[in-house]
Figure 1 (spheres, rainbow, N blue to C red):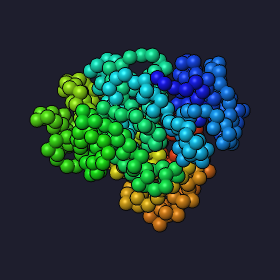
Figure 2: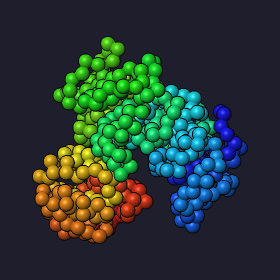
Figure 3: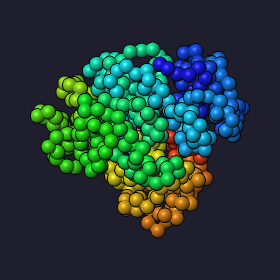
Length: 441
């Protein structure tokens, strides 16, 4: 590939580290910029394992960004940063790690995006394709950077990639043979200027598709305006002439004049949102000719992922669930809709700019709302007239308060509606902390 010899990587997350290792392995001279100082980055820098680089740490300086003909940014780095815009205006190419990886992909790509359900759907599709084809790479926003496909030097028959809106901001040539849009609800408004800008980023997943490709989209969202992929819809509530839908406890896939049926109860995943995730996976499987026996086998075996309405334990008749992955209001609302019983809800964290008022529609399910983190005052202001709210300083205090108010038959649910970065390193750290405290009760 025609890459320049000097490349700047911005952001030392998993994507930045993987990109640095790959580019240095190609013989490129690399520099790394991160707003954290070198001392704070020490544990991360150790993971580079001797990779040679020039460091630009601390507050970004424009002169550092203008030294390199190519800048590769990590998903957590806002593409609208002034230093990046200035570099772009000077003719410097700015791409993301996904676009870099795409230059080296040599197998059909199935890409999944959406506000909620991306990781579950990506993993489920990955499991189905692994059973059917054996050699499959599953990566992207799921925690395994896409560039690792090239870094590991392995060959796969199919590449299954979770792609976030942040990653889609900086794609140029990236094209998926099958693109899936699961849903779009208000999220990440701390980064985007409004819902429309966030939605438009999601729709970029379809932009470069050809007539040979497939665009799978949840029924109710508008069809892609850009891209030429064949559009197929899926729905948990509406019968479709073509696509995938649920009806009377059965899941239907209708494609190319053929119909395939599956029992919904075959899968242990609960809720209408998971029905939609499964339908998207079924469509993808049948597009690639995977037989029903293989799909049925995986559906029955796949029990979901940690931190997604995960039962931690039952104590004195009270069930404690960990839904730390619910980093937006819609995810928490869906969890509440699919839980039976009185809920003591633990929520809060770093606010992402949206409204929490949608929870008022399911307020009857909430016995007490316990709020923590930076967003607790905003949540209290918007929901205080609908539910009883307790404020606590940390997770330990929240769990203790929930334990004290809960009665046999109640449910304690951690479903934060917010990102975790005010108090934790990520949603996994938050969920693990909750689990440890609950298990110590």
